Image (cartoon, rainbow, N blue to C red; front, side, top):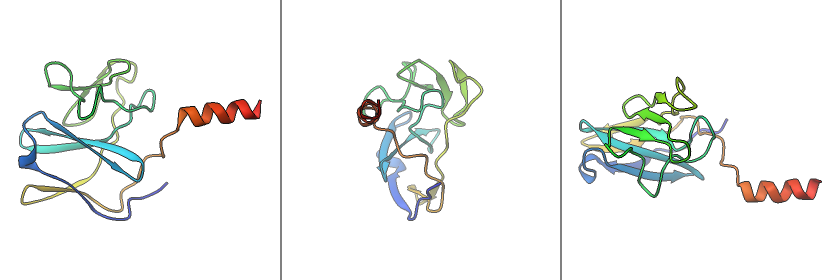
Length: 133
């Protein structure tokens, strides 16, 4: 499994409003962080059920009430503070957390943490499958 080889600046807490999300791509992997109760909670942007991105649109991860993370594909609901799925096909599973470091309200993605698998390009995979047939 690949590991993140460097620390990366994410944002300053004051850049986000409560219940607002921010996205970042690192080495072709996508992550997001949501401000809740004056802290950030960060996860890799991968649904545990389908392995696809969770968001509806850029920076849009929350349900209508802005109290839970919601998967755009099948509606699974996750707690913001723990990433635990509480409803949907992946109930009981959790989002993969991203380790952050905070200094004076500046948040950084820490080095030496595992990176999720590189995303699969479904179009390229389908074309490769056709060539193999």
